Amino acid sequence: MINKDMLISEILEINPELSSVLLEVGMHCITCPAAIGETLEEACMVHGIDVNEVVEMLNTINDSKPVYKSTIIENDNEVKE
Image (cartoon, rainbow, N blue to C red; front, top):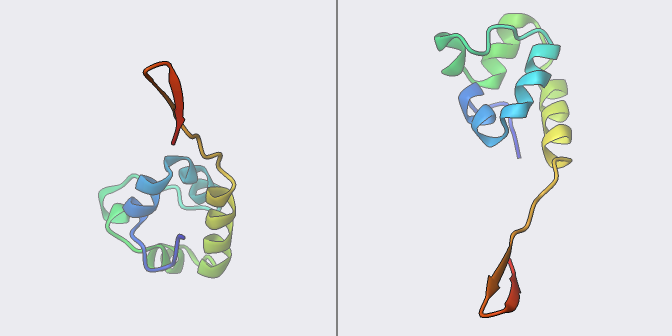
C-alpha cells in the first residue's frame, strides 16, 4: 500500500510503471536527484497537487497490476507457487 510518507524512489521501486501517474499529475522532475529523496507528500506540496488524490491514483493502478504465479515442474509433477 502506497502512502504519502513514502519516498518517490520507494514508490518507483515497488512499481516503476507508476512513474506515468506521477508524470501525468505534473511531477516531471521525478528522476532528478532531489526528487528521489522527497516523500510523495513533499513532492505534491512543491507542485501544488493534492497528495490524497495522488495516493488514491497510485494505489488504484498498483493494486490492479496482474500478479504472475510461477509453475515449477519437479520430477514430472507440477507444483504451483
